Length: 437
Image (cartoon, rainbow, N blue to C red; front, top):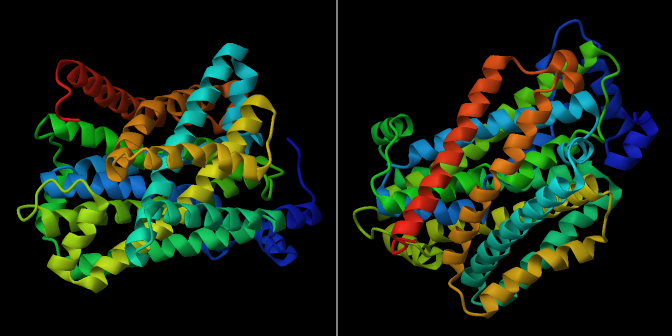
């Protein structure tokens, strides 16, 4: 584990010397004090952005418009499972000083590592597809420009956000946190406008059901859009270039702050996702069932709730696209460095991941359908980091006294099994009847 001096930490992350001193003060308190929490926040906020990208918008709108509130339980389940795995990922980085990709590289043969890297890169590309298309479509609808122009604006905007990394991670965290706040406020407004029934929301949050074959596809898409493969890798890496616990007690303090931040950040992300679906269910279900297009949803919101609500919907879409695209690129850099010990210039990384998106749109594929398919692809890629993370974090030789309790590991295993089951069910149904895709 390489420990950074306070001066190096300030230069590398953008965290001020005053903040570093406050973090040290927080670690030296006899009891954990929440007044120091803000100094440790950042990694989970960045990871949480991956859970509210335009792919979530596409899947949640179609789920809500087609099935009402019936699939809210999938969103709730995905969010709770996301909290658990993001907490695991952060724990791995805090305790060992190495990210998940680095551990995988050290533990497994080169051909397995290469396969995991390829799957992870495909997941990053699928993520960028959703984010660029979704954000580009939002800009196109707001301005009247062609979607390709909107996607170009998104690509440039993402590069500008990532450029802040040159002065440290902290400025990027502030930008991402601001965009997450904008998204959450937008959907709070939409809920106030729509006023969905609380009883229906509570019932369908806790009562699982899959009404038909199409619901299975959307459930897989929701899971793929909510529990993002690259975010699991990323969280373990974001903890590496921050303050390091010098003793077991300090590491436990950092873990305590990290777990609180993870719950808070993922709760906000979960609220946004449930609000998306509930809003679509309230506005469209029973009136215009089965909306599968973001532009159709936009014009529908104008008809049913007015131009202000529709414009705010687009603002949230653009904010989600910008922030999640930046986070996806950060994850791609970390995955390549961890698996291959290689890095490429930022502009090359952006070019490699955005070109497929422009090709898809340029060939005339339906933007929203492409969004949903990208989320299903992510759902199939998801078991790789989930299983690897469980295998690594469950090793006492690596985690020592920080190895999670067997009961927590069992819950994570059950959650992973549910994800695999839904994926297998999707494959079986696709083989026997592809007409519903």
